[in-house]
Figure (tube, rainbow, N blue to C red):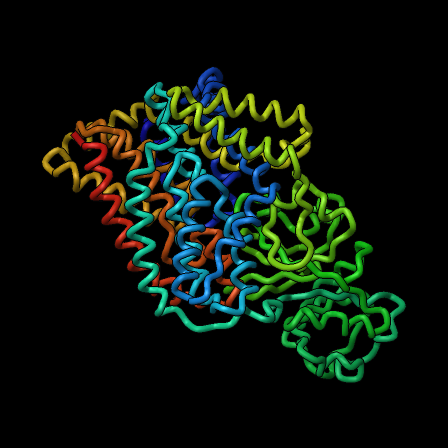
Length: 576
């Protein structure tokens, strides 16, 4: 009975993750609590899963990666990109993107390189940015630390087998083949991408809110008489009355009242026009910020503000900024900004204070697209310590055979002692979502063993899959994971598929290692939609790509990716 109930919980969990990606943290947390409440995992097992050595290593590596982002190493990559011709530049972009993302955060790499490409007059960014995004995704498969998905699978593999997990270069041979053939495909398919200049005005579809104050001379006037009907590049789309009533569409003879919330859409760079109206106050101005210096940011997938309303977030105290406007691609925004629930991939236009640049939590929650960037605080000998210390730990681990845990922990301690990173920065960069997803997944795997669900899966596979070849089973697991990762986050897809793939492999008697490696590679494959991976969202915004542009290059890259992985993984790591 317990096995059936656990199976149903996992199915419901999968459905919820497909429809509520921004609630990933809560969904995994609730399932972990359910496993504990039903007695499928005991206290010792739960705490053991939460403090698993490979999981702690994952957390430390992700914290150290956030430190590297604050050095100048990424900015120096910009100088390597631009060549005299578009083809030569494309080759450089693909190479630099793939190699740098093998050890650095993909989103940070793309954020820096986008600016270098957009600022160049020698090339068309629209021919380069999607290939760059896809190259960073594939480059992340080159090493253990290239993507958090590899680290997630390594942690779960370590817990399941009692081993040290994957080695630093266990992904490299397959990853290199995938990346090389994928980049060759991108080189030839990039010609089918549109020829577009950098998006001169990415502010054209924002929604901004302004409030009619009690002493405003606009009160009692019609929209036409108040002069709000024919504003330059701004359109009054909606009025929300003090009592909650909504007026949409807005008519010329609608009368303004005290406390009305006016929602404008259009070119937000023209927002200063609204300052000329007596008693009309922008949402950001209620927080004491002016709106002359604006910063555009993209909300990260693992941001702590995802799933919360602007009112709940307390933007001013947390970020020294206030939201002027919001843009959500593919969806019309309606209602009061304060009640808007933030989603991953939302674009926010911020009015920032003097302290914004030095806040440690900015890079943890946002990618700065335009405007004031967070201050890079690590320079000089501290920068050298971070970079060479990180390299030294990896080299030592590779040649000694020891796990990365000890070296990374010692390096983190040294960086704290030398004030290269503060305790507050560690707290802000702690990967809460990844930690909880892996802990919950380990608890699910433990529950599967304790309830007998794992045995049931193994028996099922022996009964119904024993007659099929190992490669068919491997490809089936691989394709299932790829499809899953298009609907839920990469880490969630890897975490959910691991226990299923692991027990299926045990059931049919094939080697577990190539199967779980396949899960890691498949969970990183997101080439078909702009919403499947954060870097895809970033490049879409930069030159206003359409969905079809991702399909044009994404389909052939996906085919090459699947074929390369399904051929190379069984060759390097035999299924029997």
